[in-house]
Image 1: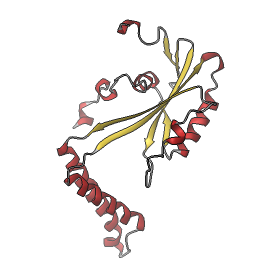
Image 2: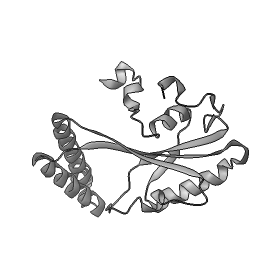
Image 3: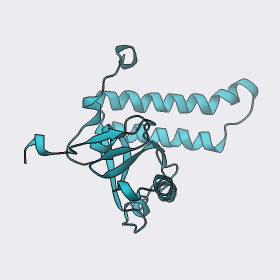
Image 4: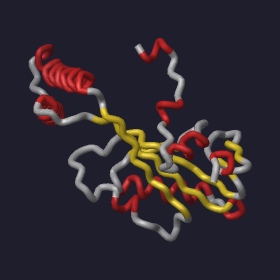
Length: 191
């Protein structure tokens, strides 16, 4: 096959931006909005990854990009400083003690800082979930509720990929589409 023969022959992102209609099918993609809170085990995504008869065709893609060593050091140090400021900001101003949550955040960022100093890398990551079903029987509200439930069971906070369904669909295929390489970021945001 050549690249000209790949992909849908016809495709339309819905006017509301919430679904992608292509070659007699409807696809909807959700994106991770927030990483799981607390301890994450190797089985955290099991419910989401397991085949489900109620969800016709489902793809789950974990996207990640490593930070450079210099950026990782800066990020680890900044996160630690921010956690320290948060933990001690209130106690310095009004004499109160730091919350347990802020103390845990300080410990976690200190551990990440030490691991990074010992050579561990840092990565940016995200999750995309795409569900595709035949256009004639597409029940998007039902699929939406099912995917929301599966993601909650996997401790992920997700949202529908509004107004970029086509790009999210392509990024979730697992064929080497690197979304940031196809993104235009205004110069005032990248500095």
